Length: 229
Image 1: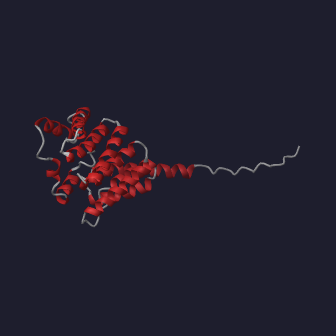
Image 2: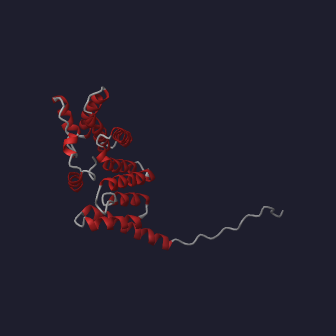
Image 3: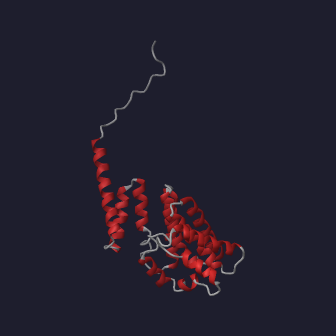
């Protein structure tokens, strides 16, 4: 998954709320060659390189398309390959695989418990592609999935930072600050949140200064429809 989604806090919640997570991602009936590819495909972060991860995930997907019984791993391979495409800057290909992962998990219920995180990952991809409305819709879908599976009162905790990023990209700095402030209350030690909030505040201040300094545009007289000769 993407770095923001593969954060330690996210994995901790996954362990608490989804006890079958580990078993679900490591089916017993995996051949040695497939296990080697899976260990590469499912790695989070910069190592191994994204293109190496893409190749390993593609081989797993090919096995799934050939009717291999380990359909759960097949479904996860799409989201893992999407994350590798994202890390490689291939956002259109990442988006296509996130779509497949969501469709497959929804249809088969294999790995459906983690759909909230896949929606967040796809939202980040939409954000990179400048499709802000679709990014916001995926954040809403992630929150809805999370509320359906979580007993926590504050189920929006994992979506707030991304909502702030979307608002920031749109130039809506006031809402970006609001989301970053809210998330910082839950994670006061995260320096990246503080950096984003400070940047949003600076841009909001510049925007306000520019607007205050802009001269009023005079109204233009409406042209006559019957000009005199």
